[in-house]
Image (cartoon, rainbow, N blue to C red; front, top):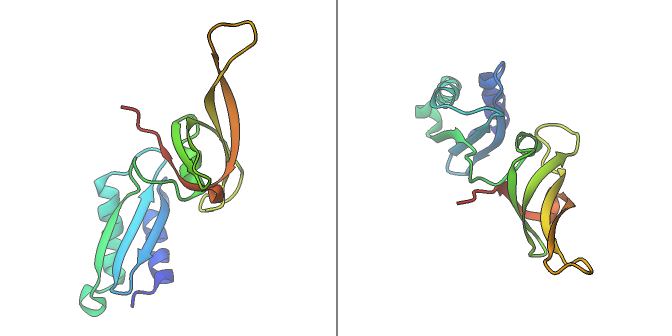
Length: 161
């Protein structure tokens, strides 16, 4: 079985000195390794290849017999750590809360903390139609909704087509 702590250290060593950060590292019982990375700028194939090479230097495929996938978290992936929320401040997001509300709005703020924290407080401004007295048409107002990642089934970049 692959030692996840050694694997995490190897990945962190491979991304040291770059703007890349680890979103998730998974190792299944059958030694399938999945490494998700992200960046405030972009993740290119060369970065993924460099991480793959570093892992392959440390873990011999013949001895460990593992399958390896290194890739970017992707634009359609759910946010998992604070660094992803911070990266998307000012962007449109889609939120599905555990109580079934689906919100579409702009991510306006994220609480302070370690970049790899999974417990994140954040604020989304959502448009709300309000019927004001004496006005025929409803007006759209922006309301701030404060949430915690634990209250959400998912938070992700909102792709509007």
